Structures are given as structure tokens and as C-alpha cells.
Image (cartoon, rainbow, N blue to C red; front, side, top):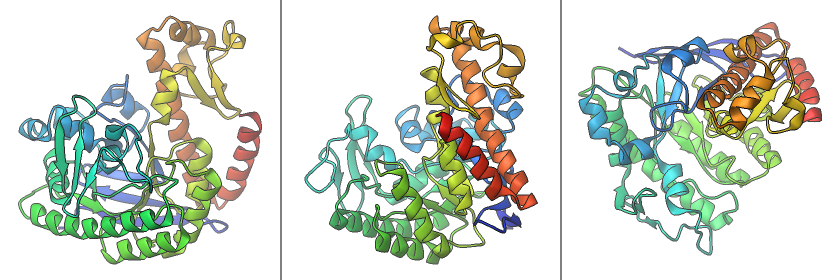
Length: 389
């Protein structure tokens, strides 16, 4: 029985935005959606219960980090990610490819954009842990096995994420390798699925840097694999916003219409709305939690920093009219005090607000798409938000 069903509910008449629904073994996901990032099997400072209260449909966990600690074998023994972290809703795990080519290597580049501390072979990638320098080797097959053990609902193919400033030659080389690895991932995934009662959906990842012809070629290739969804990787890695939006524009007509589309690592309010208008269904980004840890919060008026003295005696909440737990119960002055005193509760309150802000933006987007007013909503929001940011 197919445990993954994708249904388009409504389309916006003026953009490529759509409202849809993806059914998974752990529940339905309302799209478009933002996925809070739980890198190490936790969304920083928040409990699963708080995430449920925020109406998060799905969260993301990181394959690279969980492989290193505590190990995917440990998580498998303890019942898989859902049981281990007490999260009963859908989970997506990335492939670890981005971390292998970035975090683990501390941004040391070769002449053509290649990583010096990573050894790329046709079979896979040798890399050193950012924790202790130990040597590891990821192949497409091993990454499929790790994600199978973790037990997420949606898993990602292993890819090579070339830097945003890669040359055409290297971007093409990385793209072709990603294509070959995607085929190997699909083959191994099919083999692993035969023994699993709870199925997983594999998404391949479109690459090609900022080069139009490569992006179109990669989108066509990944579409032909006929997997349950498709992801766009290698964006928000150093290119300009204009280049990112342009890339989405040139590939949108080549993306499968009947499958969810996931833009990886993107999560600012403006990027979410611009992505939705170009037909993107799923987003993730650490920005909401990372900003919170640095005292930064979003409102409809822009992004603000709690360190600023203007908030020291502000009686009002972080955002007037916001219905999140933080804004219903605490003044900006109090939240600022907690942050300035490095109190953990303050970080939690800012995180709750930031995640709620993005999830509410998704909810409003779905509502306006259904009404046929999304483009007007987007333009009005961005005109006000970007003016004040």
C-alpha cells in the first residue's frame, strides 16, 4: 500500500503558488509549510509538546550530526527517531551532504571550488568529523542505510553541494556526480524498503549552481527518477537573492506538478513568500532558532534586535496581535531582560515567537492561495516588511 499520497487542493490564479496535502505514515502535512530544524533530534530550547502547540506539521533532523553522535545504530536500537525523541508527527532527514561539504571542512576551498579537506571519489566522500577529526566515508548506499535506521518519513538522496561561487566546470562535475549518486540512492532505497513495515519517501536533490542550463538539466534528470518528491539544493549558499529567485524561475516549469517541491535551507520571511509564489511547497532553515539565540526576532514590521535600548521599557509584546505563547504572556521588556541576562527561558520565548511567526505566515499563505489573493497578500507584506527591515 502506498503510504505517501500527494493531493493539490487549490492553485493561485496569479502565481505558481498552490495549497496541497502530503500524507505520510505519521500524519498529513499541509503545504506550503516551514519545517523547524531539529538538527540533533531537538529544535533548540523547545519541547515536542511546544512544537505541537505551534502546529508544526513536520520537523527536520540532521543525518550528519546524528550519525556522528549518538550514532544511527543507537537510535535504531531505541526504536527510531520518532520514538526516541517523542515526536509522533512526520520527520524529514537530510542526507548529510551539505554538512560533509561545509561544516566538516571549515570552508577551505581548492582552486575550482573543491574542498581541500574532503576527498571526493566516484564511490563516495571521505571526510573528517568536525567534532574530533576522525575519518569517515559516506557512500550513497551508506547514507541510505543511515537514514533507514533513523526512520524518518522523508529522506534525501546523497548529493554534492557545490559552493555558490563554483566555476561552471566544477558545478557541472558536481551535478553529474549528484545524478549518478541519486540513481544509486534509489536502487539502495528500493532494496532497504523491502524489509520495512513503515515506508520512507526518498527525494532527489536538484543541483547545478547558478547556471541556468545545468539547473534545467538537473531538474529534468531528477524528475525522470520518478520519486515521491523533489528537492532543490545548492541555493542560499552564497549566491544573491536575485540569483536564487532567478534559478527558481527558470526551473519551475520543469518541476513535477504532481509531487511536493522542497527548497532546502531557505527560511527568511521574504524568501518563503517568493518561493511559494514560484511553486515551492516545503522549506527549512535554522534562521528562526539561530536568530533567537542572538536576540533577533521577526514582526510584520521587519526584523529587530532585543539588545537595542528602545525595548528596555516596552510594555507591549514582541508583536502586537501575535497569538503565540510569548506575546500573549510577556512584555518585550521582560523578554529583553531575560536575553540580556542570558537566561535560557528568554531564548525559549524568542524561539517560540520566531517559529510561530513563520508558521503563521505559512498558514496565511495557504488561506490567501485558496482565496485567490496570495499575490496581493505577498506584495503588501513584502512592501511593508522590507521597508522597515
